[in-house]
Image 1 (tube, rainbow, N blue to C red):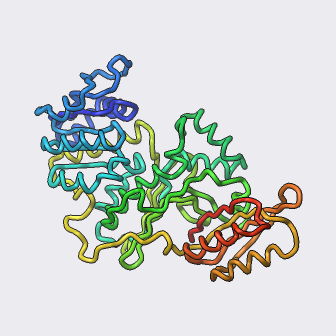
Image 2 (cartoon, rainbow, N blue to C red):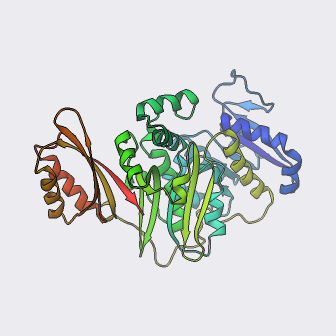
Image 3 (spheres, rainbow, N blue to C red):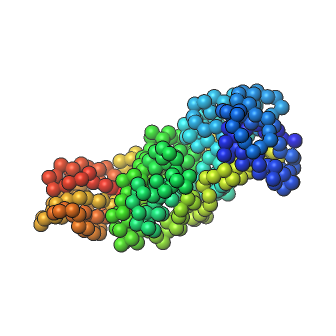
Length: 420
């Protein structure tokens, strides 16, 4: 028998207990051993939970219990979770976690602590989609050329509703909160931090990159308006919050931001609260992974998959995908060196000569305009919706700084990157 302790018996922890009980026969057959949760850790012992396992408020009753084989960490947070997981590893216990924030900051520390102790974390990225296993095992013969992911269901739900129904951001956010798709404080989701944590985990497996959230470009969706969707539809684009990793020689771009992407792309068709990840390998080409990215049962499915892997007793894959460092190590590309197309929304005075002045500013920074729409605004103002040809991030930022000094500009410019 494999004895499991769960630290954090909330929505996901409760689902893990229930699925292990409900599907006991097939799980035992697949694992070759019975798997039993023998203890759970909660904050409040008085709260009713529809499960029948011994509960405690002390996580070290799990980490220090010599009879427990696997510690499942579902408590969330960073530093407290790190201390507890570290203790479990020091006690030579296998660990399974769904904690993306913990891994975003401490994955390499934990890799060194774990060494040959199984440490699994499939549920930390894209919920029920087995993207970790795909990168570590299924695509292990490939150089990963690019990863593009929709890995936050809250943002994808909001952007899908804005696209399909023409609703504004605030209205859809309120609806998402009422439906339970968004937290009361949605900042972590809508500002891109949740998706960034997941991207960093995938980047370590794909490229061996040890970057922290503070090191990469992260932008959220709060500035997106219905005008942006009008431009997108006119020119055949969808707007998605994308996590993007791009390999170029010995550098990797890592960025999270709203993106205009052609509607014909597979990743652009991922709608609602669903997640999707596109991976391009140099041998296999593009593969696509789609499914529920959150929720108790979907995440529990990934957690239990890891428990079964450990119970089978075989060698688990290297935690971050590499048995030894790459001889030609990959570096994180600077934000300023990004090259792509850009969309800009400008609120300007509606009078002759303004477009010529804007084009002149762009030309001074080696940027050319590819397409444009003009939409009337209040009074004598107009919205100019522009897209550029491919250019450099440093150049577009300098052009925007120059634009901000112009008397005809009446609002902070909004810029959205484009992917093709």
